[in-house]
Length: 104
Image (spheres, rainbow, N blue to C red):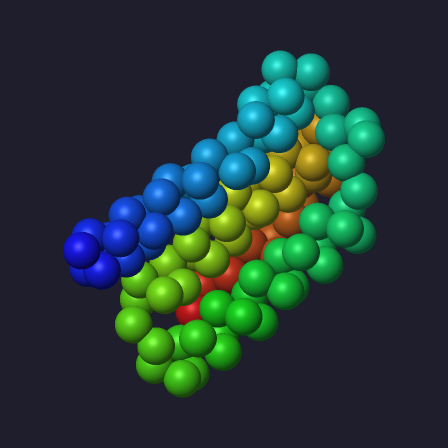
C-alpha cells in the first residue's frame, strides 16, 4: 500500500511539473510577445532550480527525488528563449543556455 502511494506521489508530481509552464509558454507563443513576463524573476527561478539540482546531484540522492527539477529547468529555458526571441535578443540567450548542461 505504501509503495503504491509513493509511486503515485512521485509520478503525479512529475506530471504536474511537466505541464506547469506549458500554458505560459503557449500563451507567449500565441501572442508572439513576451510582454508581461519578468525576466529577472524568471532568471531568479532558474538560478534556484539549478542550485537545488546541483545540490541534489552532489548529495547523490535517488533520481526520482529530484527528477522534476530538470523538467522545470527545461521549461524555464524554453520560456527564456521565447522571451529573447520575441524581444529580438536571441544572441543574449547563449550564456544562459550554456550554463544548463554544465550545472548538471
